[in-house]
Length: 115
Image (cartoon, rainbow, N blue to C red; front, side, top):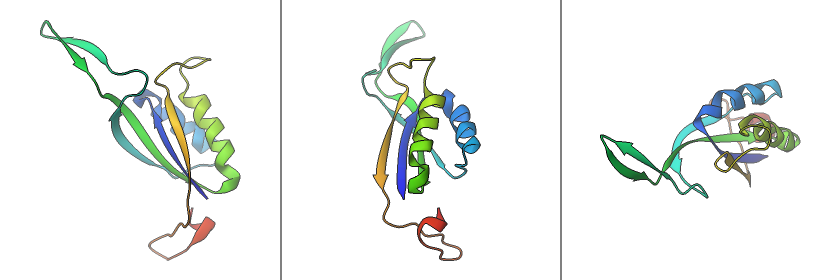
């Protein structure tokens, strides 16, 4: 089992969720996030005053998948979250983390069947 920690643009959430459902990934947790990478924020103007926005709004997804779904999920996320055909800075990141155990709280099912 693996946990995919995914950060994407907020406007890509719907497309990513639908694409994941199409390949059989139905369970995920969505979190609002703020951060920056190579984008390093941007400047904006409010009431005629320019100011810097250092943290950009992002969406973070936590997705548990069994090992046979890892590559399929990653490919699907990359295609759905990419801006245009070649992508651009700020499209997001995916981190793959090993998961030692998965437990369903209501019936105490453990392991891959709990995912």
